[in-house]
Image 1 (cartoon, one colour):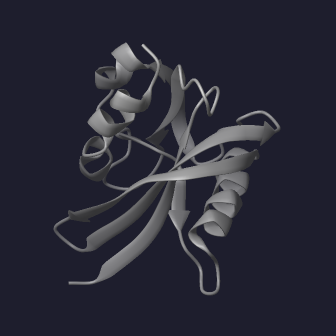
Image 2 (tube, helix red, strand yellow):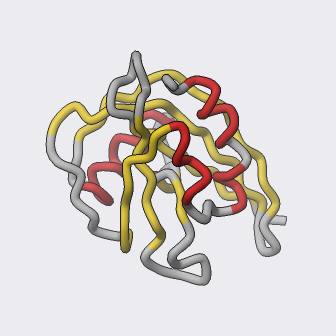
Length: 134
């Protein structure tokens, strides 16, 4: 089975307090409308952090500061295996502009279950919840 390596940003309102996180709804493909943490594929020669900064700039026209690695998710979709490094991040400069997503929300700890997460992304929700401020 083919492995796809990606990175995802769990963008929060404040990297120290983490009261809200930014979630996006896919705007394309068979999983259109399902919710995810924005990010994308790591290109040849990029570190995961560099890939994440590039992807967020491309998808959301925003410069982010990449924080600590939360976890690496290993998930088997029917067609491929996903290896996804999830990092804490916060907006360093710019406004979040949706270029590839159909919707976005800032979610509090209590609202994390209010959206229909992609199968791989939902596996890290409890870990994120445990690190967010109540």
